[in-house]
Image (cartoon, rainbow, N blue to C red; front, side, top):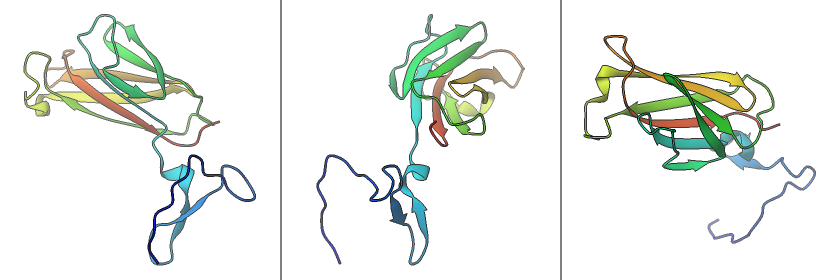
Length: 137
């Protein structure tokens, strides 16, 4: 069976947030589980930090050597998954990212903390990409 469905909104029949998607021959999963809840792209050298692109992020907070990512909507608990990647500098975006480490940690249901250090354990500038996966409250 093939076709195109064009709609402005999807709702589960019995529960609005419960839509099951087939992801293999027999495997299913709730649609909401596989969607990124928030993402942001920023440079650490911006002062104050400024999202150059984002979804589900209300603001960034400069916290000395760390940048806090403030989420628009709360997650259901603190057991969600922030993932990150980054590299390059503002002067040369093609800079090898292997000399930088970008770490992220959950601070609360609405905040993720990030920091970038080099192999010499000193703070570095970086293009940061952070995404948040998990259940919304």
